[in-house]
Image (cartoon, rainbow, N blue to C red; front, side, top):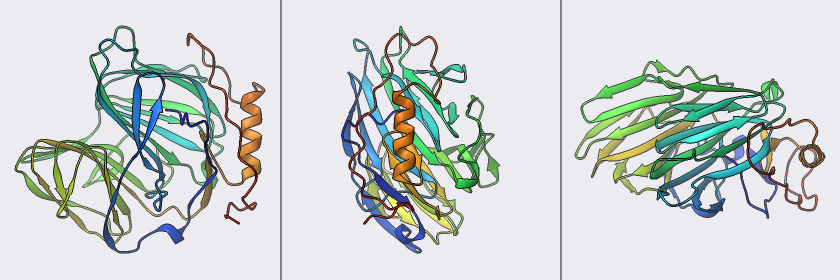
Length: 321
């Protein structure tokens, strides 16, 4: 998914300075952003005061939206570099096309994982015809310096490992949880899981104390370590946890996101993750001039134009002046 913000700011993320080394309960409120003609998303990362969770650098939650008489998701071809995109649905379908030639319809609880590496472009749209409801999340994972120039590629995994216990089904999207490992390719220690809880259940989910964690509420009401978390909000949990208490006040859905703190400082702007503002400007120029990012075949429409990069205000290593 694209960041369609026409006033996109250069944002410094990563580095140990942003990490909370102990368990906390920090509730994050979303920023509402219009995506295309009929989809509004709730942006949880980057957030004021909280830029990343492990390598997770960008989190949008959207829906559930009734799109029976609407075009649904319509995101024209746009570029990415230095990151992976994770497409995750609870309802609806999204048709993915990219410049490597991938064409894939992503359905609920199937993993669509695109590794941009050095450069890729893609589009996302609701198929025609499409299901009545659209509900999901779009997330980015920052690639570490050693792997951020890999060849771009796309993976689709319809069958993911699940952990079940009374009242809980956990689908492992990326990384490993409680001994179950996702087939999705990762480049940094990370975990992503979809948690489906039934009303009244109480459990404790095992965690890695070296990871920092957050939970994104997708539906229903659940108490996470005693904090009620409602749909469209995110609770940052810090590090140092060996387990996570959960209690569902209704049937509910959560996404658990975690990973080792991302030590490298990165610069995020629009749909790019780099290390310097000069690198970001070069990428924008390459997209504008039609080089490097390739073409998305089969999309009926024009590519997304890039906004203007704001005036330089970052040092070469990405620190704010």
